[in-house]
Length: 112
Image 1 (tube, rainbow, N blue to C red):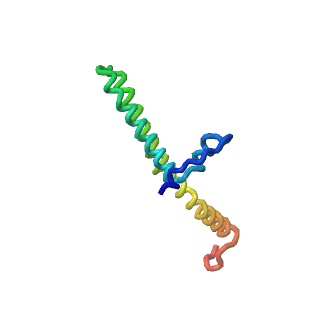
Image 2: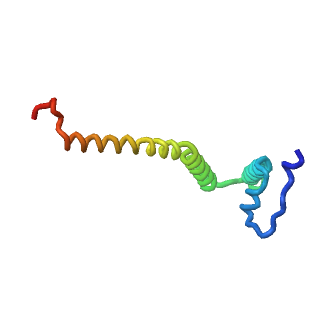
Image 3: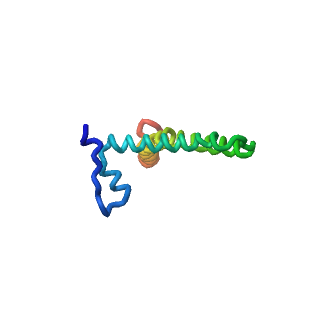
């Protein structure tokens, strides 16, 4: 258990590569802590500002809605659209080749 939280100091590497060299459990812990801290920081605005104007509240609501729409698109919809598009490519190629073959080679059972 002690090896999980051991951080190797690698000098001369960028921060991303140092983070990539860490144990995955430690990466998850750091990521969770960072998200918690940012959420707490954003929520702490209510302690320092008592009255918020309607314009500021509208801006904050619009920003939150935009973030949620972007998150739902990139995590759910974009992947499904990509999977569907790549699955249909072979079907489209088969369909176009079958149509060209039918046009080039007449069917002997059908009298022209």
